[in-house]
Image (cartoon, rainbow, N blue to C red):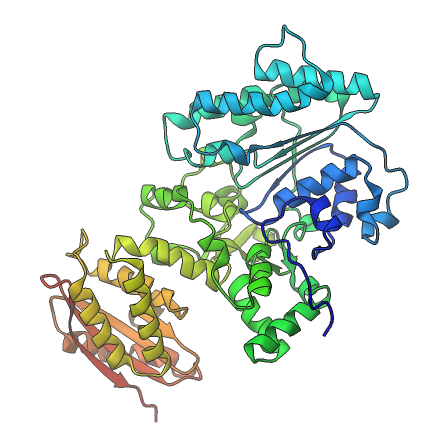
Length: 524
C-alpha cells in the first residue's frame, strides 16, 4: 500500500492550504483554464452545499494572483504560459447567514473595509455599492491590471428566508444594491465568478447585470465540482483499496458501496457519474460509511418549502420535468422541484433531449435516508434514538425475511409514541410506512400500477419482493382479499424474486397496526 499517511481536506476550502499541506487534490484546473478563457467573463455556477464551490473559487483566486508554484504538476501548468497577476476581490457570503437587513449591510461593510485597507477609500463613497465601485476602479488604476471579482455563496443571506414574504425582499434588495456596480465597471473587470446553491432571477438580485452566463447545466462543466467515478477509480484507487481492506471486502465491493451511498449526481445530460465529495472524503478519512453530508446540516428552508407545497414524502423524485420546471429562479417556482434540485436533494437521472424532458430523482441512499429522517417527525413523534433503534431492528427483521416479527415491532412502537395530527385517513399511514421503510434503505414505492389497479406499496430487498395493501378501520383479511381479487402479484411474476403478500389494517383509534396477514405467492 502506498500513501499510508494520505491527508484528506475535510472542511478545507482554501486551494493554497491544500496544495502546500500536501492534501489530496482532485485536479479540476483544466476547467479553471477553460472558464477563464471562454467567451464570457461573467459566470455563474450553482451546486449543492459542500460540493466544492468554495474550493473552486479559491482556485480561481490563486490562479489570478499568478501563483504558478501552487499549480505545479496540474493540468493547467501545461496550458497557461503567462500567469498574469490581477487584483482579486474575493467575497465569501457564507458569513452572512441568519442576518437581518442591518446586519447584512454591516457584514458587507466589513468585507469592503478589508480591501479598502489595500486600495484606499474616498470619503464621498457612503453606501456599499459606491464603495465596491470605487474599489474596483482604484484597484485597476493602481495595478494597471483588470480586476477579478469572486463572490462565493452569493445566496447565503437569502436561503434561510426564501419562504418568508417579508424578509426575503428586504435582504434581496440589499444584495442587489451591492452587486449593482458590476455592469458599470465592465471596462475595469477581467473576470467575475459567482457561486451559489440556488438560482435567483437576475432582475431581482443582479439588477442590470443581464450578461451572466450560467454554466450550471452545461455538459462541458458537469464534473467541475464533485468527484467523478473515473476520478475515484484512478486518482483515488489507493484510498478505495485501503478502505476495502479496513471493512473486509474487495475493492470492487467497496466501489459498489460508495456508489450506492454517495454517487448518482448529474448536473446536466449527458454527464459522468458524480460523487458527493464531502461524504466520500469523510468516509475515506474515518474509515466507514456514514451519512456525513446530511449530518453536516439539514437546512430548515427545505422542510419549510416541502410543507408550503404540501409535498408527500412518496412524491419526492421519480418525476419527469423540463428545465423550465426545475432550473428556474426560486421566485418563479410554482412547485417544490427547483429548490430540491438546486439544493442537491434531487438530481438528473436521465433525459429525453428531443423533447427537453429530464428525469429527476433522489441521488443516492445517503440523501434518501437523510431526507426521510427529516420528515419522520411529521408522522412519528419520538426521540431520534428510539426511532433509530426501531429502524435498525426493523431492517434486521426484513432483511432476514421475517416480516411478521418486523410488524410486531412496528405495532408496539407505534402504540407507545405520541399521536400525530391528521391520522384519520389511510394516506397518512401509507406515507408513514413509506418514510419508515425508506429509512431502512429498502427500495420503496407507492401506488404501483398493475393491470387491475394499484398496489398501495411495493418493497424490494435483495431476496424478496413485498406487495403491501393497507386498510384503515377494516381488517387485514379485507386487504388480503383485495390483493388476491385484483391479482396484484401477477404483474411481478417475472421479477426474479419470491413475492410475499402483506395485508395490514390500521386502527384510527389506537393509531397503530390492528392486525395483519402474510402470504407467500406461489406460481404454477
